[in-house]
Image (cartoon, rainbow, N blue to C red; front, side, top):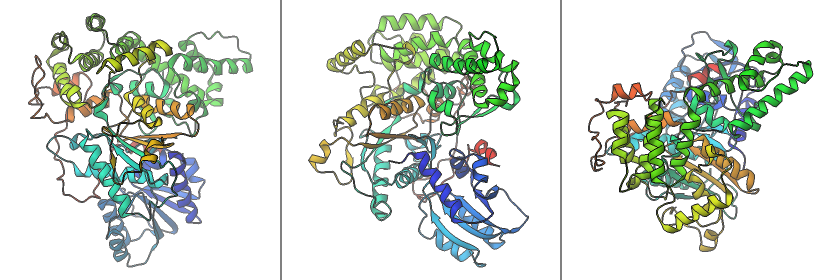
Length: 612
């Protein structure tokens, strides 16, 4: 199965090759982000692209000597802008490439608007997703809160099912579809994707394989623990502590960061060091960076002693020629220095050890003691909140739990966050055995696995719930009552065969910890390839922001001893003080709006600026 990065790059290369001579590449905000994930500006210019532009930006000057490639999402707004452009063309010819299936009538509208006959071709190239890693994709949909409760945000739903269809078309797969039975979102997406494959059967007529590929649709609600944890592998740490958006990191405002390193690109495809180290833990990463500096010292005959991360930073500052000769390495030294500072400031070694114990170990008396101890220390309000959330998720049903007392320690605003977490992600909302403690057999199995395998690193002992699901898939033992098929079921003999090509899509967002697990699974199982996708890629902050956008369920009973959450207005100030964005009071789109509507064009300006 081709990787997501290869598929998108191939589409972009074909677009540029299809149009000979000097040309301009015009994109919208979303497709700019998509292209910037797989191509640098220099690489684009090497394709005889003279200019990169945005369809949203008004341009008055005419350049009839240039041919235009328009790579756009097929949204109503983009169609309107194209029709407006055709009335007064700026370029000599127009080659239109849409990132997804066009709706009936859209091409006809463009044809009618093209009175001057400047359009040379109209194609569908299904690069409608962000190819983050070779086996990780995102739709850059920050919230699915509008797909729960009494409202239904049709525009968000359409973007999700369109994005999944584009992934299948880009990877040239027509898979069997299984979905999480307990999730209405997963069921509806499964129905729509299955219907699209039937309606567009010629497009999905890829070569049949035995066993057939599998599309597995999951819901974030079954595992709220993974996005809450501090992370200790490189890519995940960067996203958790600093933020990683479209493979770009902003260090603006961080102390001791050179101006040329305030904006950093982190992509395995273009950075060999990052490719080799992205899933390594903090300690191994520091050793590898030190090894590169040692090699440079050997070349320059320097005798300067390097024994700490601070020494590495000082070395880079003292040798400007090192930064010039090895930009990628100096970039990673700078990142490592900032991560080290944030770990120290946040006391994250101590906090994370308790987080991991809460996530992985069933020991209530020890958990109470450790959480109490940290709540009384000077850790940040954000870390206090996460500890109480993790404790509450694990011990929600424990007869002697201390949820009420811990909530008093974090104040009324924090208590309301705990209330909301338990109502949307608590035991009553989850279908899987998240903590492997629902039965004597599950507890025994987990204990045996821990004793046999051991714990190599206390900070990375947690394994996401996705691991249990994928292990069952690879054994051909995924429970059909919990994950039924959508559409035509395979014959019984086919069901017994474990799939070797698997696309897992997490509605509600995936994480870099889950991406690391998938990468390790692919490496350990030759002949099996798993691609992980999600509506977005969460860190703890974005996950809690998503939580606070979710509506209060009228049917959900309040958690005993905690304040009700009938109004968000009382908690906005307190949430802001904890570093969590307040809820957005926005008008949701009615359920019967057009299935091709998409208003999700924000959040990619940074990527766009990189290409301009």
